[in-house]
Length: 77
Image (cartoon, rainbow, N blue to C red; front, top):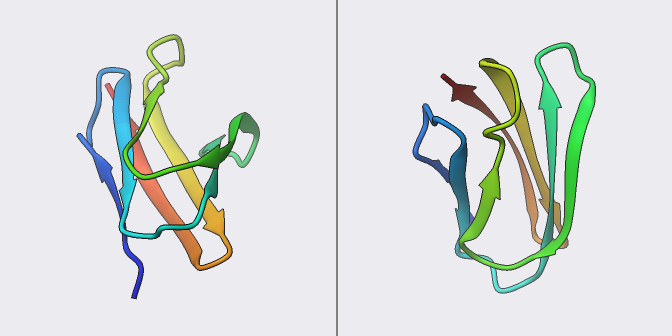
């Protein structure tokens, strides 16, 4: 089974999305209201992301791929 880890959580701006999947995956970042902030296509394990320019709050991280489907929360402080 493929798993996804988002760390560090909470973050000050930079964080990683790690998975044990060997297939590429897409990452979408939404605010808590559901507005899309950023899309990052064709990622591979241990993808570094930076949301330091975004407001503090809770963000929804969606990771999708051929063998992945994950939705999680990330707190930016």
